[in-house]
Image (tube, rainbow, N blue to C red):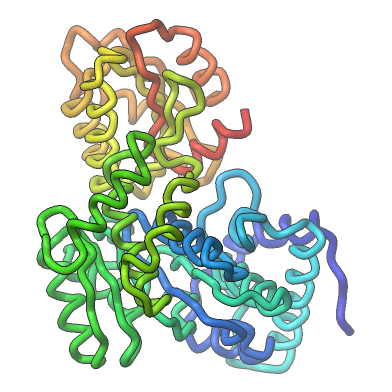
Length: 430
């Protein structure tokens, strides 16, 4: 007998999923989606993978589709404050009632499968939410859905989708325990989303990753289009660069220019039109683009960024130094927390070497993946100049540390919070 769950029951259950299950075989996901009527096939899709930038690129593509008049779903992860952020239609997050309704449908399917299918296992956290999103977008009769992968590609729950175009963004070293210890191995996992004869747009920022994607695309008879602005000038690159610069002005960090180029190339494939025909749609979409937690200014001198791996930290540092070069600030105060499964020593070294740090405020994220404050303080002590050794402060109480960091600001100092999207989410709730 089917059961109906409340929003509170739904979110509490999903939050508890990691405690009693782990990622399952892709076959398990196919069984669940088939039981639900394969809702992921209800409409046209765009599939986006990558180490960094995939959330931003997904949102830019969704904005372009919306500006073109399409009812567009967007599935992203992680959320910063509420689970509802993970699925939206034309910029509006799923309502609590619809969330509970979709949860109930998936939960009832899971319960029946667990009872009747010996091979079926309870879906993992991300798999469960993806199934809910597919159900939601199907019920809402959207025209397109932009699906962002979780941490991988080949084995990702979303890889059941057959898209109009596959997109692979910047690739760097992250989640090595799952994806491999080299750029080539990680690129191979991301390239697992490439489907036979489905075009792929890529902008990895690395030649060795590009080669992996190109080889995979050729093996699948799939057209492949590089969106890299950094040094490639072929095709539409100069026009795209000009369009992005004019649309963004100085409001976006440097790394979003490459993300915008990637989104544009993907949209051109979807639309079947040339750049000139799509220019106004693209311009409006990029002008309206914002991404919470990605170089987001909360106040004139307070910026937060969810960078949590080497590649993203380097891009964050470049963007902050660009702000400093404009002469508004001379030094940086840092608010920092990190997950224990990240290469946080490298992250700390890069921040200490790349920014004129004045004070460092360290705390812990509200997660069982938190890294101990004292361990992080030791590393900052190792990499900061000796004269800054007394400028390192730590507390497990993040709100207190955040308030202290803000209270110590002066007119020459920019406060940067970076190291973890979990931390960014907590800061946004304060």
